[in-house]
Image (cartoon, rainbow, N blue to C red; front, side):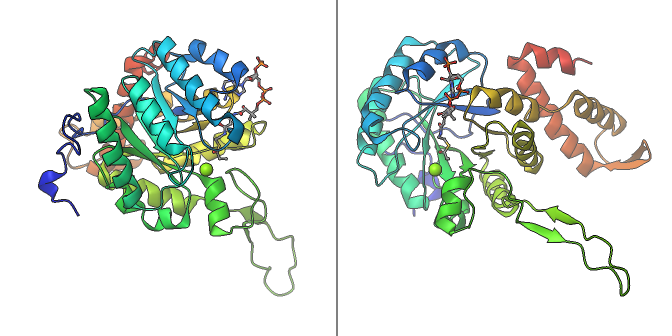
Length: 350
Ligand code: 1VU
Ligand code: MG
C-alpha cells in the first residue's frame, strides 16, 4: 500500500500531477454510442452541447470484428470535433483481460488523450485493477506529453467488485466515479433475471393473509432489486469524494419505468445514468436536474434558517441544521447546472 504522503505523486516521470478534487461537471447522462456504427457515429457531432457526456463505447455491444474500427472511429470523431465546455468526451475500453484493451489504452491516450476526460473501465474486481490502469495511464500520459490527467470510472458489475467497492472508490486520485452495471452483475451473481436493469415482477412482497375468517384479496408490492447495491455504491463514492451513477436501462420503449429507475437512483444520491438511445437523454436530463419546486423550497428553508443553526417551523414541518444541509445539496446542484444550461437557469430564477 502506498503511503498517504505519496498519493498525489505522479506514477511516472513526466506524467501530470493527479487531481486533488474530482471536478464536479454536469454528468446527468452518459450517452453511449458505437463509433464503428456509421449511422450512429454520424449523429455524434450534432449532439455536442445537448448532452453532458458522450461516451465512445469499445466494449460489450460492439461486435468482436468491429473492435478496431470502433477504436479508430472514436479517434477520428474526437480529432474532428470540438466538444466545447458543456460536453465531456469519455470512452469505455474493453475489459482488462481482453485481447483489445492494451491497444485501446495506447491508441486512445496517444492519439486523443488531450480530448478524453474519463476512461470507463468495465468489470473492475478490486483496487488492483485500478492500480494497474493508474500506472499504465501515467506512463502513456508522460509519453504523450499530456498536461492534464485522464480520470477513471469503474463499472460495478461483478460480485467481487461489489464486495470491494469501498477499496475501488479510494484506489487512486484518478477515480472520478462508479456506475452500477446491472446486467453483468446479475449474471455474475447468478441472479435469475434476463433483463438489462430495472425491476422484476417476481421480486415482491405479499400482504399477510387477512385475520381468521376474512379472506380478501392480498395485495403485492414489487420490490427494488438494485436498492442494496446502489446504496452501497453511493456510500463508497461519497466517502471518497467521487460520483455514483446508475448504468443502463435496456427496455428502451418503456420510458416510464426508465424514468422511475433513474429517479430512484437520483433520490439515493446518484448524479446521472447511462443513455443508450436518444430517447433516454431527455429522461435523464429531467430526472437528474432538481425540480423548480424543490429549488424554491430549498431557498425558503435557507432563508428561514438564518445563520443555519437552530430549529424553525415551515408549513407545519420542523426544519433544522440537517434539513438545511439537504437543501444546500439541491441548491448547489441547481447552481452548477444553471451555469451551463440557460433553460434551467431561467427555470430556477428567483
Ligand atoms: O434514424 P436513423 O436510422 O438515422 O438513426 C437511428 C439510430 O442509428 C440512432 N441511434 C443513435 N444515435 C446516437 N446514439 C445512440 N446511442 C443511438 N441509438 C440509435 O437513432 C435512430 C433511431 O434508432 P432506432 O430507434 O431505430 O434504434 P436502433 O434499433 O437503430 O438501435 C437501438 C439500439 C439499442 C441497438 C441502439 O440504440 C444502441 O446500440 N445503443 C447503444 C447500446 C450500447 O451502447 N450498449 C452498451 C451499454 S449497455 C451494457 O453494457 C450492459 C447491458
Ligand atoms: Mg457490462
